[in-house]
Length: 279
Length: 256
Image (cartoon, rainbow over all chains, first blue to last red; front, top):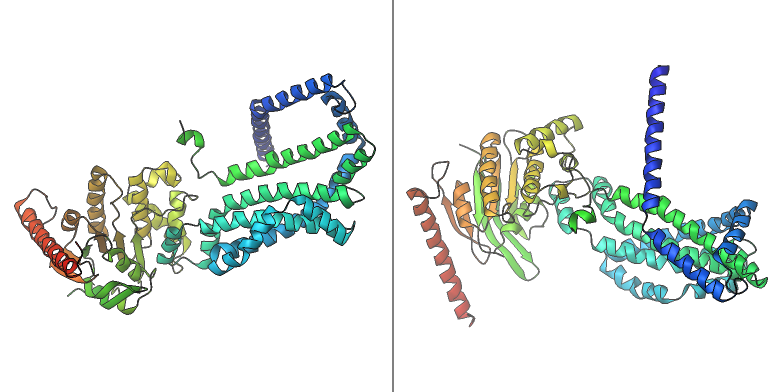
């Protein structure tokens, strides 16, 4: 028994090892590094041209501040506060976006009903939601949550609405001809066909939510990444502003490559690889 | 005497103001292969959709019976395979399991029919990984695996090239002889209709039955044999008659 257990443990550790090695290989081969390196060279050049500090601090000096913020643990405290607000707001936005999107996509009346409100929601800049929320709700939790909800839900609703509209009627007719049960159709047909639109909705909605959340914290919060950016601004610490902004960007990259891309890859196994189609 | 597997009586189907099927009545014997022909838009596919319950009936009767068991299940092979792209071929067939069939029995049937259409080895592949002909065979296996009382086939080979379609017709006839399913086969290809069916129902431009002919030709049918050519030319005469009636109707309306 113990032998069998140790064998299976070895196997699983080998599998994990292989996965990590594959992931690291993918990371090294990632073509995006080149663009990042070019941006860093450009940044360094501008910084040198302007004297190396002051208005445009060099990437190395900024990295040093980022390191300090990370090592002190302060970043994670502020990130925790921002994430809590973000998750509450985004969950509400996702729920509202899903309801409005499904209603608009499936019924002509609801499409007409929500159409203009959605367009209005899409066109207003995040800054407006952030400012209004702070004015109306003050510095409590409701301000970022409401700003995220109203800024983010139209983007989610649009994606979901288009997904519902694009649903293959022929396949739905097939399920009707074979008298497949309602729940089986929802699980095996409707949910998988909505999934790419759902993932697109999450990506777009989450990006908007992040930005609005930080913006609201800049205007009216006593903690969070946005608050730290404002604090550094008041101190005229450009390095601090850059360090906190970049760390915030890195979190987005981690979410992108750690959650969204693997999820997309997992749920898109049934699609031909683009390299198989375009040769 | 064989019983009727399909009974259609005074069937009328309107889409708004447009009448697509007009007082259609016919019965189909069990284990027979009936072909339904007609020009595009004459209501052939609508007739199958009405039988499958996809479209509602305006008036009349369209029902499926079966004497040997209580099943009134219908298998439907569409023009395009209509497979779920996110499921493997086997999962696609498992998906249509009728509620009164347990999972184990259905799984066995799925394998049986996948083998029958020659797709058992590729059952774990996704539809995009198969050719058009293979996907259509998967569609046929899906229709057969529920062991339906009646198999509805709506121009199933029209999207395939002639060589693949010819092979598929042969395969379909082999499966039909093996399973004795009642088949209602819609096509716009007159030659295909005569090659496959033992009865031919021709619909006119108004969705009415224009001709109902028994095809009493020996199988396998050779397209170059004299009997086949005679019967086929007879069908063409019916078609010409139908077209000349249509031309007169259009002339009366002042249209060319």
